[in-house]
Image: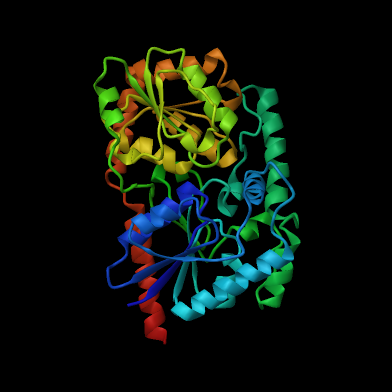
Length: 413
């Protein structure tokens, strides 16, 4: 038996649920142990039956918002102070030693990239391909400037080239990572790319999403991994699905905003549909939504296939993959380049429509929703994608890779 340490950012829904799926896929002889600093999605880990170690120092809500803004490229300032990074690395190194963990599985918990290496524990990173070093180095257009005309294409290539240099070469990583890495005997992390490149970068993509790309050493495709929340479907969902009006799912993950949630809900209020919307965590007391929008807590979205007719998504890989796996056509509003990439990949397959989040209050958004509900071509494409997803199990692939590393480590001991 081996202890496998999982270090998700526990206020990131997709990352937390992705690691839960991998932990579930491990052989029962191994012991998954989760650690984290915040508690937003702690209940999902505990409800799945896994051991959880609450660690500190944790962030305030303002610091979490700042970290998300930095991750999405909307801010330069970060909450990664020398004191915080050093303290978290110390906590994680002690945990790895205590558990004698031969493998560490992480996401965007950036201090793992120091602590695991300092303890010489291979770092496994199940990750979407978009915004990885391999993707940024090879992509000519990141779609920072949208449009198909010559001017838009040229402007986007220039913006992409500038972003590539900033991401892969500019010393823009918070200084604490270079200082603390050096203090722990690890090569300093100076670029944004170095903060998010592990020993094993396991790409949670379908094969067609990697067409035209060369995967460098340390990168390999494993397949989709998305949430399977262990909860019943609320009765209201079945009631709405049985109604004569189409049922639309509004899912905005954990990286959207109150303003976007309210704008989307109000736009959907103008349509002859019912909406099930797990957006309660974005709303404040006194916020109102149209009568046809039914606000809920987090739902087991993987069980909604056959119940909902279309989805409105923020573009996070977890929500996109859930829609793909359940055969639901969707409208995607990428909030940052990674999310836009996911939505565009599905748009090319025919099962999605990309709409800018800036257009949620405009006719373009409502028109896209109506098309997702009525276009037979989108339904056919969604069914074909669903069939392809049925042959994939990214979590099982990652689990087998982890187990192979555990066996190698045991043989070398």
